[in-house]
Amino acid sequence: GAGVSQSPSNKVTEKGKDVELRCDPISGHTALYWYRQSLGQGLEFLIYFQGNSAPDKSGLPSDRFSAERTGGSVSTLTIQRTQQEDSAVYLCASSLASGVTDTQYFGPGTRLTVL
Amino acid sequence: AQSVAQPEDQVNVAEGNPLTVKCTYSVSGNPYLFWYVQYPNRGLQFLLKYITGDNLVKGSYGFEAEFNKSQTSFHLKKPSALVSDSALYFCAVRPPGGSYIPTFGRGTSLIVHP
Image (tube, rainbow over all chains, first blue to last red; front, side):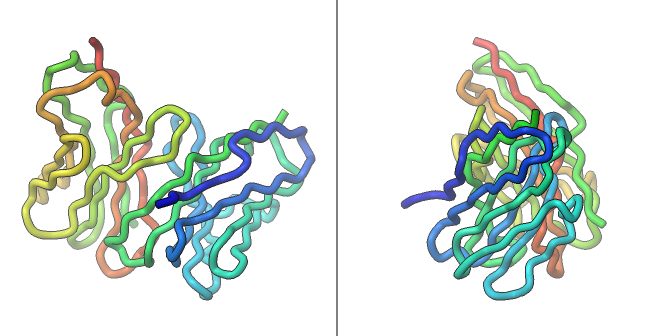
């Protein structure tokens, strides 16, 4: 079946502009995660959605970052007033539920470059 | 708080030789441990996980990992490396009792030489 999809695959923007990154999770998966992957830094957790519960935003690095998940499915990560340090690959993952043993399935990522 | 260490940024191995990618963890209680692989310009793909039971876990593409509680390790292994195994490998841990957000290591680049 279809996996996690993300769009766009690449995004180049100018410093100060806003960007929106989209994630389509696997159908039926209730949990959705956003991560940021910077070169040599591993995966940095950003935000987590589980069903209709309030999202866990504890990983968002600043108030320029926000995310929403509409209808328990598609999610959008928004970065306002982008800075050069925001350049990274943004990964989305989903899992069937949020149990600690549940496997996460990752999308291919969006590579963001801020000039 | 939990943590994961992948002590090697890069591992080089010749094709046909056995490979090991190391992972150690720190967590209170019995951990849940995961290995993922990332090929260039792709997202992470699940390889295997340890939840409970047999310490030797077998996963995709011929990989296996051994949970060693006394050494707090979960090293990834494969008996015979392939050039196509060249990729970035991530170890992750979730503690028991409810944290739904895994902690990932920084990744180890595996390079298999022909």
